[in-house]
Image (cartoon, rainbow, N blue to C red):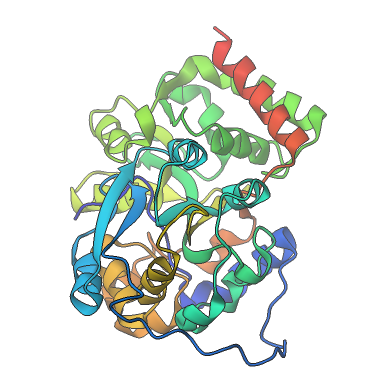
Length: 376
């Protein structure tokens, strides 16, 4: 199997309660199940005249299998052109530069900054009837109240990946990255500054989203202690940690469940744990840039992707867990049962979602990372 840079663990039924509590505390989530709203106008019926001939789907490089876009083309006669990016920062820069895309995969923490400068189109909810398939845990979250600009696509964790045959003590906490026995064999994705700073904050007992200058200064000091002992994992390349773990160049590293899943497929002695001091959570969304000339067709594509059977096809092909509850019955049971992909409830107790920062908070994080990057 081939996996993207990050696996995107689905909201497995047994994890719903725990994740709901996490999101309630972190995002001040307001569930909409009790809300009563006027009946929305009927969805527009797609016709040959109303549809674009082609739409551009912008996502991680080598992220999308062709089967689902081909099914959309077969059903609606619209070609889906897939364009890949190497990082979220690259994607945002291209959107800001006015490049034309119709549907973009975007991490949730970037949604507020994009909507603030009017770079995302407000979604026409009457064209998204399949949004009813989404778990309530992923609706109306703080980064996008009312899901006005984004459709939840997937969620996942950042944890610790390690060579189980080369560690003397059980790996259980982020603090284990600082253990002297792993000097020179610690892997960090240095192109993921937010996650590196956040895991360091968690190792100190602070919030992953802290904007307290004193706490961030303490995190910087701790990171500088770790820097001489680290090996940079290049460009978030999914294969990098497994290759370095396989040749013993790295013994312990930040990583994703998919790293361990792929390692198990290749019979490597690699384990993955969610740290007791709190894993990092993220979730991806699908958005339509404000300058898309094909908004209606793009919304039709979003609605198509939320169809239960189609969504399950994506999960079965790519092992991308989904917040789409209606898709569960169509997902391969072996995927649903795999603990590497769907962690037990107790492992998520101290997990935190990486949230958008305030302008001042982002400046603080940028300063911390600059000082860390330029240090010897």
